[in-house]
Image 1 (cartoon, rainbow, N blue to C red):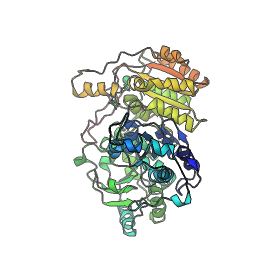
Image 2 (image 1 turned 180 degrees about the vertical axis):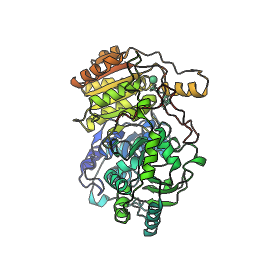
Image 3 (image 1 turned 30 degrees about the vertical axis):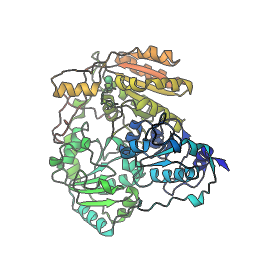
Image 4 (image 1 turned 90 degrees about the vertical axis):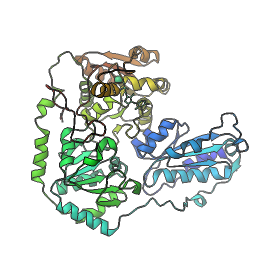
Amino acid sequence: MLNAFLLLQVAAAAPPPPATHDALSYDITLVPADTGTHILGEVQTTWRLRSAGAVTAMLDSSPIVCITGQVGSKLIGSDAFQETDITGVTLPITKHNYLVTRADDVAPTIREAFHVAASGRPGPVLIDITKDAQQSSAEFDWDAAEPKMRGYRPDHRPAAAEYQKAISLIKEAKRPVILAGRGIIQSQAGQQVVAFAERTQTPIAMTLLGLGGVAASHELNLGMMGMHGEAWVNTAIQEADLLLAFGMRFDDRVTGNLKTYAPHAKKIHVDIDPAEINKNVRVDVALVGDLREVLVEMAPHVPATEHVDWLARINELKGDSAVRDIQNLPDNGHLYAAHVINDIWRETDGNAIVVTDVGQHQMWEAQYYKHNTPRSLITSGGLGTMGFALPAAIGAKIAKPDAEVWVVVGDGGFQMTMCELATVMQENIDINVAIINNGFLGMVRQWQEFFYEKRYAATPLVNPNFTKLAEAFGLTGITVTKRGEVVPAVRTARNHKGGVVIDFQVEQEDSVYPMVPAGADLHAMIRRPSPIVETAADA
Ligand SMILES: Cc1ncc(C[n+]2csc(CCOP(=O)(O)OP(=O)(O)O)c2C)c(N)n1
Ligand SMILES: [Mg+2]
């Protein structure tokens, strides 16, 4: 007989992983599990739950298993000390949840929870275990506990007729664009997407969470689409005659006004989740299934094509990158966030794992750090969870100890979880933190500037001295105010073993361009005022 508490770990350590995950790690960690899933593509477990963490995982399809402790089963419903109906609270923000009141059910539930979290469209699963279930004992037979869930069939495969419809649309298309989302990373379909794109000469537009899924350096990769996407990418989508949505969900930040979205385009949507089909955008063909499997199936039937005129048209839309190039502007005494992020990119040869927070710096990171490998950008997309970066970077470093991990965080978001510097110190986590300190809740300030006549209500920040703060935690702190100091600071941080915090004091009222105002037509972008017309295409 085993104590049920230990059983959690026995169940966790037990071997057979589901077929789609060759190295399911059942480690029970205290670090943000969400990041582990981003980095490793495996289910991670957490004993701590913040509702924002669950929603972040829900909206970004991260497979995590959260375990919470409940009062004794006999006390449930009595408003006992610390009793919270957590399965009730988390019902809408988890893929599934369980209340376990008997030791017998602990291990089988955990096994099933991992299956649910990882299969189909991944997501967060919560198990709430009562104190008495944790403290009593039970036998556990791994094989007998194989999950059998009536009504849960995550393995979708499109019908042959759907494939045929898709292939004939692909053959007819003159101006196709692939829209690549996080699904390409989740289903490890990067290679298949590139092969498809090369064979059909189809350019690829990326969502924020797709970045890295196809190398930024690939000539058919146009870059990021959407609210802060490159102008030529959004224009190409609006001019396209076929959109191939691969593992993406037509989020409002990506489409702008749905009524005018890609008006000339037929649409093919490949997604593992049937609930995404026709949710925001009506599509002509839906292929519900695992993206990689779908592309493998389709590949032999897709003829090689040229789209010379279309690619030339997009090239023309890109225009002269020199006029957009903020990087190579002579040093005029201004330190732009773009300089900082681009210098981090150059110094790390684009090989770091960058974990961002939410706001302007997040968008600049997406624009100026070119990600060539999947899982090298960790960011909160669907929820935009400020405070995500520092704890998530700790998770990233623990999941991949050999990787170089950088945090790119705003001065506002950093203050939401900066207490985690204690963890960095205590666990000797070797990460570098770049605070893009603009003295504002910058993204909100930008909206106030553009849409509310510069009424900067509640957005100016009076910050602590971040360098001294780092030092108070026994970490290295560096202050950077000039462009010439950026590279030396980055080098110092890279050469230092242990946590480093760099306070980059950048332009306070810089804005992210281009910008599609919320709900506006995708092609109605606000462009960077001259002399710098656009963001850099500095590849
Ligand atoms: C927890 C949370 N609160 C509020 C917001 C709304 N919000 C989005 S961006 C932003 C400003 C972020 O400021 P900062 O961290 O300084 O980054 P910056 O935009 O200046 O780069 C705010 C308040 C959010 N996304 N998450
Ligand atoms: Mg800020």
